[in-house]
Image (cartoon, rainbow, N blue to C red; front, side):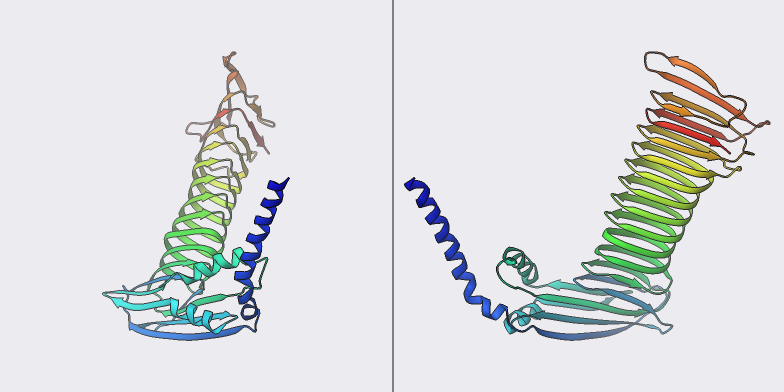
Amino acid sequence: MRVKQKKLLEMNYNKLFFLAVLLPATPGLCGQEITDSKTLRRSFRADNETVMEVTNKYGDVHITQSHSDSITVVVEISASSNTDDRIQAMMSDIDVNISMTGGTVRAETSFRKGITPLFETFKGLTKNLINFESRMKIDYFIECPPSTTLSITNSYGDVYIGDEVPDLALKLSNGNLDAAAVDNARMMELTFCKANVRSIRSGKITLSFSELRTRETGNIKLSAVSSKAWIDKCETVDLDSKRDDLHFGSVNVITGTSYFSDIIADRVAGEINLSVKYGNLSFEKIEPDFRVIDIKSSYADIDLVMEERSVYELEIRHANAFVSLPGITPAPERTEISAQDKLFLTKASRGSGSGRPQIRIDATRGEIRLLQQ
């Protein structure tokens, strides 16, 4: 009993000591909010091959175009807190370097002493005890010629690109992207982001816990993890998808792999070549002049809707899988390959003539539904 009382006394003493350290600072922390700001501006001569590189954190990057022969970089830095000392500490901690080397303009935000991460950690530890508020924002406003190649890295802020860009490398985390047309996305890496891009002609897109909406894409490679994408019109997409929801309005060619993903296409015009494990595939309209459908699946559900006038050769190799083929005439032929493994081969032919497109499905478990309508 005495030991228990002693432990309680020690715990209370530790709490009182911790509060004694914090409370003297409380009046200053709860005072009126103070703000400070400064603006930096630099301009450089540019030509058709100039590259603009931006590296930033805790702010937005705005890109606009002008038909001048120069690149102008404006940086607006602002900070707010409850004390003058903290404002001065934050402002002095921010270092913005803007320079040009060869044909590359570089603008970079860095932090000299790491005070900002320390403030964030302290705020997290003390949020239930004192009203601690410190904020900083570093915004870039860049005006450049239309031919400028862009390379942007930004964290905890948004990126706005109002005009068509010929070449873009983007690494964005914990922010939003709002962009017009991108001719070549050399890299578009989005982590914990929401992106709205009018069109992407070609490139490589990587999504992690993010959302992408775009009206039109050309030939793209899409790698995604736990993300969502809505693409209204896609020419060719090569997928590496894990636990995603992907929706295509229309797509000409779709290839790649998926794991635990739901993939929907309202219309497929040319080719499907996919390897899927778990998840769902749903292709709601296959155009009659499609070229080939080749799907290998494990524990996945597959839905294909064919037009009545479509002609093709169908071959489904299925083990422990449910197969439904309503509306297909003449009736498909089913052959048992292995009774022990419940392995069957189902074949069907539609139309006549040589060179008919092939539908090949190799499925282990799951459900395969092909509807002729």
